[in-house]
Picture: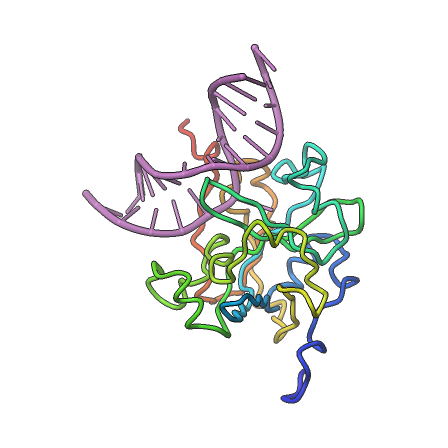
Length: 214
DNA sequence: AAAGCGATCCGCT
DNA sequence: GCGGATCGCTTTA
C-alpha cells in the first residue's frame, strides 16, 4: 500500500501486468486511476466500470475482421491507449492488453473524478452531478480531454500526457459482471466488470440488433 | 465511388 | 423511455 510521501512514479502500472488476457486485465484495472495532463491542467479518474474485448474470436471486437489502420494500436504492445471516434461526436478509450501481435483491449466505461474536479466540470457542463461526470465511456474521455491525438500513447511512461496508476485494490467480492453494453453480438459472455455500489457505473443498454422485436 | 452503421450522449416527453 | 445528431471506418458495387 502506498505511503503519503510516495512519488507518483511508484504507483505507475508496468507493462507486464497488462500483458495478460483482457478479461484479467479488466478486473485488474478496476480501482486503478487514469490521469491526463494538458495545458489546461490535470484530471484523474478512478475506474469503476470496464469491458474486455478480445481479438479474432470476439465478434464484438474492432479486431474481429483483422488489422486495419484504425485498430492498429490494439495489435501493438500492452499498456498503450487505443482511442476511437464513434457516432460522429464522441471518443472512447481502451487500454491495450495481451502481447505484441495479439490484439486485445479493455474499454474504459466509467469512473469517479478524484483530482481536477473544477476542470472536469468545465469540460462537461451538461453533467447533472459530479457522479455523472465520467459515468459512460465518452463522458470519461470528455473529462480527461482525450482525443484522436492520444491514440497510441504509452500509459506506462511517466513522461506521457496520460498515465495509468495503481489505486486502492478492489476486493474480488466487490466486483460484479454482466454482458457488455451496446453490443448486439456475443451477449452470452459476461465481459463487463464494475465495482458494486459505485455511483459512476453507467446504466445498462442492450445492443440495437438484440432489441429487435420477435 | 458510395452507402450503411456504430463499444454514445443529451434533451425532451 | 425515446429519438435525433453527426461523421469516419468498413464493406460492397
